[in-house]
Length: 174
Image 1 (cartoon, one colour):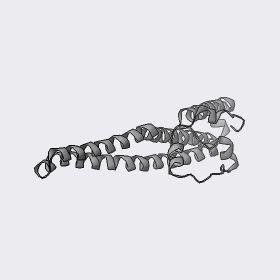
Image 2 (image 1 turned 45 degrees about the vertical axis):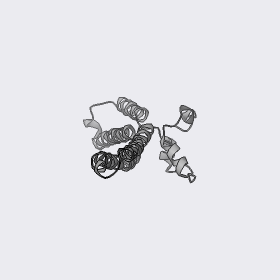
Image 3 (image 1 turned 60 degrees about the horizontal axis):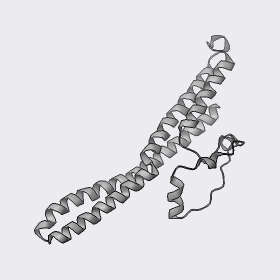
Image 4 (image 1 turned 45 degrees about the horizontal axis):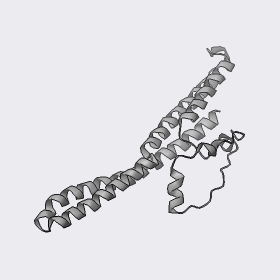
């Protein structure tokens, strides 16, 4: 379980970094387009008819709205927060197990069965509260990764959304 916690810590940190980069890809253009939109409303009035200024503002606002909507649909910030929270919890469980194993038997304060039960409960709670994963715990223990097929742009976009519960109906691999 300690090795699985370390592996899941690493996986969740990779996921956190991925979602952080993805959030930047949305947030930076949204901020830049918002600034250009507000400046164009003020500056363009002096050089261009109001009809064209309104057209430019509406196009920029629509682009900002679409980018923000996609970011909300993909739940980027929620997934980023869940990844970081899960990584910290898995690291805590791993350190707790390592500390217990490093402590001599006569100095341990908890019973072995109780300790394992507590750790397993924390482990399962962390898995349940984290982001859905396409890699099962079985794959982590055997160090195999599931086969990955190349996806196009829309396939990658759809893969980012929350998987359906039916994707996890097979519990035999856990």
